[in-house]
Every structure is written in structure tokens, then in C-alpha cells.
Image (cartoon, rainbow, N blue to C red; front, side, top):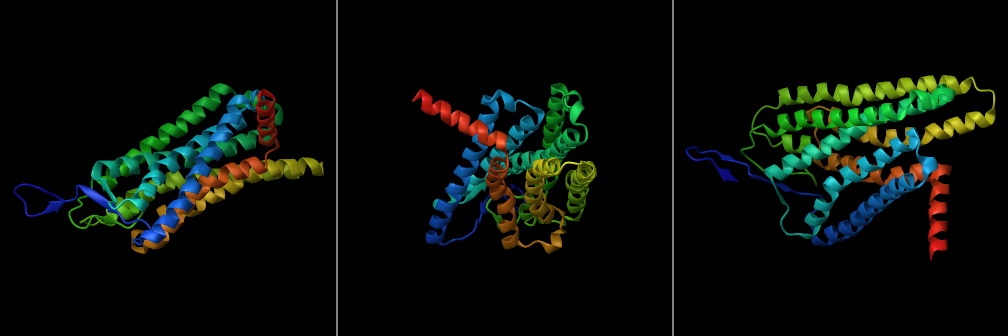
Length: 315
């Protein structure tokens, strides 16, 4: 705690992240489990990025967007999990006020970017299935780059607003955060003033960043479903549904937990449940995305086998 001269009130200069347990044995087990999850997430998403960069036949809008999704997953899992792993073994579990500010901002920026980026991926599937002959004309590389850049700009801008409002609150009392990283609802619950206005700001932002993207994705897939039903070939039906299934699976894994965390009122805040739910969309989604896309995607499988084959020949 930091004392402000001339005042009888202390202000928080650092936070203590309580994590999941205070038992050393439990923390050692959790360290091994989460280390494996983190390394698998990084290697899985890194492999997808590598394959897409190396294989020229994967240089299409769909795989360009998939590559960016893998980068986002690697980014926001790296924002939280390395520090959590250190805290599981270290005696000190503190994080400075500035460090908490930065972690909240970067994590929020990457998660918000991914939230809006799923709309771009849904639009890609819509164009591919509903306008296949004009796919490369509509989604030219210039538009792809602008769409990707727009989601990043949107993510970092809205996260700046969100973080500024949260961290501008006065924190003059307890500094123990019942979470494994500086998540906004957990930190905000420690503020020594009424946070009703900040909650309202969060709800407005959530409409733009959660409700609006989900609505656009649903609208895209309604149009896609209508187009698929018009196809005469059963094989075409199967191929089209298979193409969309991976994206829908990933979208469900992401939006389900994040909607629960960020759209519920502060009055229903539950530290333990929120930690478990946020762990799912933070760590497990980044781990599952490479599995979902690689297991259901023949092009990724072929690219992997081709790279492995070249490696064997080189050896």
C-alpha cells in the first residue's frame, strides 16, 4: 500500500493475485497441468501459423484469417498464463498497479480483437459459400488486410476505454484479487466507491463487442444455411457444413464463457466460478482451436504431412 502525504487514506500501489489455491502441493500439480496446456497452445497455434506461411496453396483469405486467429490465441494466452505459472511456485503473488493496468489492457485488446474478428471469419464463409465464383474478387487481399487491421484497431481502442474506466477508480482498501490475472470484474470489485456507472459503460461496450458480433455471425450463418439447402448435391451439403462446423465450434467456445463473464451484473459476481469460466475461454479455447481446425481440415493435414515429408527427405 502507498500512503498519500497529508491524507489518512492509503492507496493501492500493487495487487495480490490469489490464484486457485494456497496449498503448495496443489499448486505444484496445477503448475504441471497449466504448463502443458500453455506449451500445447503455443506450439499448436504456432504450427498452424508456420504451415500457412510455408505452404503457398494455403495463401488464401480463409487461411490468412486463420493465421491471424492463431496469433491472437497465442497472444492472449501468453498475456496471462506465464505469470500464473510463476505465481504457482513463487512465494510472492504480487503485481504492480502499472503491471495490472497493462495486463488488463493487452488481454482485453486481444480478446476484443478476436471477438470482432470472428465476424470477419463468418463473412469469409458467407462469401465462399454464397458467392463462390466471386470469392477472390470480393475478398481481395486489399480488403482482407483492411478487415484484419480494422478489428485490431477496434480491439485496442475499446480495450483502452474499458481499462481506463476500470483502473481510474479509487482503490484505497483491500488489494487481494480473487483471480489468477487482472480481470476487470475481479479488480473492479475492490474499488472503494460505487461502480454502477462503470458497470453501465461495460454493458454498453458489451453490446458493441459481444451482442453485435454474435448477431452478425448468426445472420451470416442463416444466409449460409439457406444457400446450402438450395444445393442439389449431398456431397456439396456435407462439404459446406464441414467448412462451417469448425468456425461455429470455435465461436461457441469463445462467446459462451466470455458472455457469462462480461455481460452479467456486478451483483452476481462469483470469484471462484468466474475463475473457472475465464480459464476455459482463456486457456482451453486457445488449446482447442488448433485441434478443431487441424482435425477437420484436409488442407492443414496435407500441409503438415508435406512439411514432415520434406523434413524426412532433408534428413
